[in-house]
Structures are given as structure tokens and as C-alpha cells.
Length: 286
Image 1 (tube, rainbow, N blue to C red):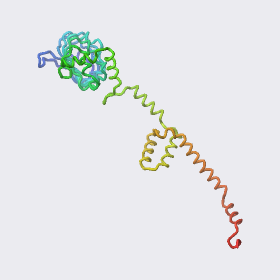
Image 2: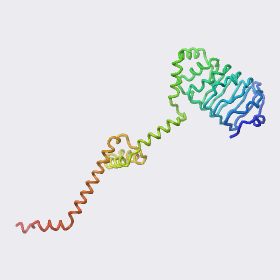
Image 3: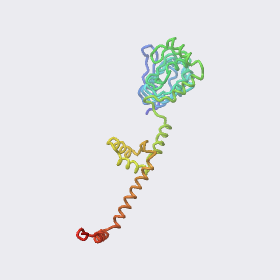
Image 4: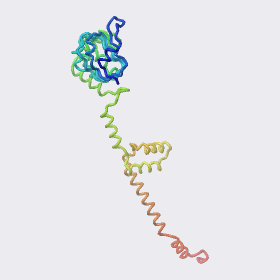
């Protein structure tokens, strides 16, 4: 990773772009944190921080001139709630392909008084229910969202949908509980799942029950399912209630086999000979 130092800023390309704005190119430096932008001396209309590793959109100095911030392909998950105080003239913000997940995470953008163009494409937030209407509702000055013009019909629909504060809070709550494909799981949820797996792991007695069930299985599918459960260490749900009984049954069966073998040992060859001697032969019966 490379720190965003004053030296890096001074050595990075800067030029007049296609719309005649002065632009600073800080792309592809693996920058993890925004810092030292005061070294720009507020001389740029556009700053491009794409293709870095920035996690938080924060730590800006006061930049009265900055109008466009391009920050594609980073790892942004959080935005400074007071970002508008430091970027009062920002009208275009491109956050394509970052890691914004829940609707509440874009609320800080409402502090940007001049924001008119916004891209949140390729963030999981775009998959949340009522995403577009929520953003239009929160950012009153927005003219283009995800490269699509905001229509008056959408503004009216957003106003009607979020007419009350309760509906807005419910939308935020729903977005935090709705899982979307590709979303990074919460650490606490993963820990809870692992804990659950530990609790349901079979005991030695339950393993005996699984083995007994394999012996008594009627189909190859059932045998395969139980063998898989035995290898994975996870007790099948349909055996949870009978596992203890099954284990006791196996134990009783083993004990019976032991007692029978002991009885057989007690009745050795000498007993067999005595029985033959005491039984009359066919000729003696005649």
C-alpha cells in the first residue's frame, strides 16, 4: 500500500480534462486512506481516486473548488456524516463498484448541498428494496442517479412513499435485515453460526446411534446419507430425538452378545460330552 503523501500529490499527473476542468489523477496507487489533500491547495476541479483501496470517504480538508470526485473501484463502506462541510461545491460523485450495502449508509450525502450527479452502480445497496426512490427522497437536488435522469414522476413517487418518518425508518431497517447475493456476512452472524454447529455436533453415543442406523438402513440412499453425516460430524435432524435411545439399544445389543458369549463359554466341551453320555442311544431306547 502507498500513503497519499504531499510528495505523491505533487508528482501525480494533473491536466485539463475534456470539459476544460483542472484534474488531479491519483488512480491505481493502492491508497488505503484519504489524507494530505490540503497539499493540493484547492487548485483542482476534479480529483480521480479510482482503483485504490480506500475504505472510508472521509478526512477531507476544506476544498471550495472541488466539483467532481471520482472514486470507482475502491472498498468504501462508510461516508463521513459531515462531508458537506468540507466539499461545499461538489456536484458530481462517482462511487461505482464499492462496498456500500445498506440504505442508511448514503444518508451523509444529504449534507452535500450541490450534489446533482451520483453513481452507486455495482454496490450491494442498489439491490435493496426501494433503493432508487430512497436515494431520490434523501438527495433533493439530485438530477442524475446511476446515469439515469431523475424524473418528476419518481420524485413524486418517492415523496408519497416516504411521506412519514416511520416509513423511512422501516425502509432502513429492512435494508439491514435483507441479505443480498455477494454481500459480506456479518462477523457476529458467522460466529453465531459456528457456535450453533458446535452445539449440534454429535456425541460419542450419537455416533453409535448413527452407526446402528446404517446397519438397519433399508436403502442405499439412506446408507449414503448416514455415512455422510458420520464423516461431517453433523447429526441428522431425524436422529436427534432417537439418538440416545438408539445408542442405548446398541449398548443393550452389545451387552446381550457379551452375555450370550459368556454362557457359551460356560457350557464348554465337557458339558456337551456329559449331555451325550446321559442321552440314550437309539439302540438302548429299543
